[in-house]
Length: 384
Image (cartoon, rainbow, N blue to C red; front, side, top):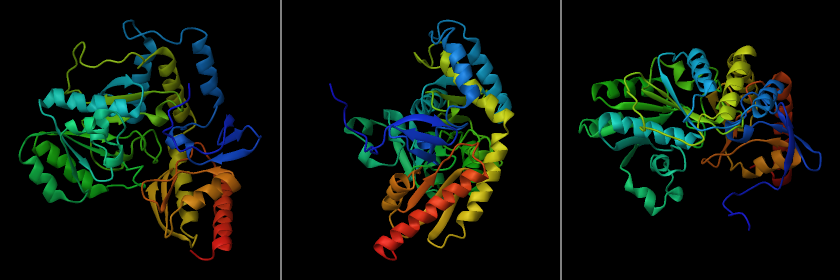
């Protein structure tokens, strides 16, 4: 049997990782400023993270949600405390797309409605419901078109309220900061207005913090820069530092009942142990504060590189825009300079999503490699 070929992959096999570095089969060391799509939050192979997982796997790694699992309650308590959402409940699943599926389901159960408003440029996942609120027609099969989703531009408040006035909208969903679209922050005015609209028209507000949450932007959730409080918050990626886990933070107005939601693997012993270790490391090592500080440093340093036209983002969720398509630059960075970065649906934008525990030396090294790559491209091709 061969693999179903759906991923455009780099010609690199990684066999080891440590901190902000990964190593390939030839022994080459790469600086990781992408974290496998913002998944690596507390650094590769963090000693405490590894230790706790090893200890747990020697005890029990899995049983279903038909038994009491104390690690689930501990994870929920820690998450509530560090995020400031102590009065909310937590449903644990396995991934970001599942988190969004369950949030949509909770909202629909509560309102009795099914139409959803999402936004242009959005990405919320690849399963059916999440894909229906993702603004990328290339990913959508005929089967996925059964859902009723309305896509609106971020600042088109007139159209947004016009749709809400019909009172048939179940929920509004937005990313805290759009990631795949090229690091787009909707901004204070947007969040202030959609929260007021949701209250006025009795509509559920869901914020997808799968990529922008868990301290990445210098606050636990990116939306916490603004004076808002959504009804449902979805998380994954950095939640497990590579172990598959996701979740929904749920306002107390939503009432659960047996069978309402369910998952075979979600909330198992090993997944919760990974989630607990991540939160303990974030708190103990003050990684949210570090993300904010390191982000300010790298944004300042990037701003003086003349080839860069725009810089977007906060903390360690950064989009760097050039006036030329960046795929060649990305390849030079990866293969020649040995540094991992990401791209986006905007062909002119590089995404930087390093772990939250990088330091100034990592930043200096990255900047050196970026300048080397730009010099190489400009010298090879002339001014772009």
